[in-house]
Length: 431
Image (tube, rainbow, N blue to C red):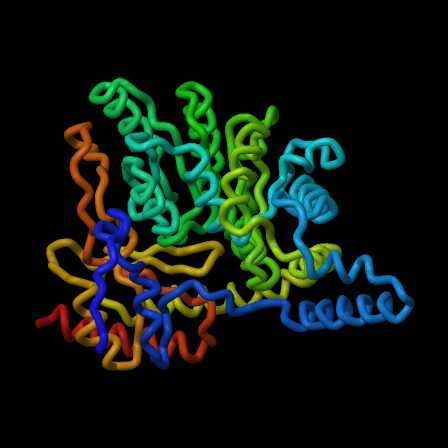
């Protein structure tokens, strides 16, 4: 006889639902424009590295030397291997012009289980219930949902074709200070080809956000997940380049877009923040696997410009195919034109009263097409800036748009799938 047991779960489990992207993974469709899966990876290089690491370890064991093999399959420092941290900071100084001396400053680098763990550890180490956090609206749910989970208060600020607006952030800060007597604690920014919209901040806005952070004593969380996945136009320096004293910006990056889905993130952090994040991370999984870090270290010793050129060429062709196809086959609406990253954003006019989630379930998925509806990129609770009233109002998801991922779809399937989706959209909206 079985007995039904009703377990008592944490309150957040009642508030925060399963992520929409994760929920949509249950569907198997021909035209998958859903999750941002890295679809152009240096797999041959990585496979060769895995093979070489194994050969080297076997050779050392055959020579009666077991030290490196024991290290490779053992625990290590929570912050990561010193050699990998030094190498990654050297690359950030060389490739992104971060203003640091690697041999002196690499201790402020931290290796994590993906950039997602960097985000969670940072929030875990900084947020108290009631603290205000600013982000673009729509936003990356992997950031704003943990804010809500930890008791923080999300305020979504306006964004346009160039990303988060300075005016929106200034308005949010002024209203929060006027109504609640405090300044926001964090400002979250994806400057390059952001998730979900694919927009890129111009240099002037990056400068403005740093000046605001200095003035208001706000920590900027610069999510650089797509920094190396830029295939159009001039590269723009990170906000972190302005943080000469390493006090104001947490710079978070990921191997998943640059190498392979090794589940290794890396971050350059202010010293006190790095120490507290390291403490928090110690309670999650103690450390990243040494073997994976060894693979990453060998990868980042290769000629990245040569490797990434091939990767970026693939993503550029896929992005161009999607942008051109949406422009050609979709009904009238607003779309973004990404210069990097994985995503194109499209919204129907508000007067169309289009419900993208309902259409996805009832029409798109049955026709072998899947995308992520726009409402998936809003937290379950929080505020947004009302620019006309210069005030905050409860957040309400925009339901009339979709995020279309081109990263893991071949060009012919992109063109074919977007044409089919556009035809279905036009029939639906005409009715």
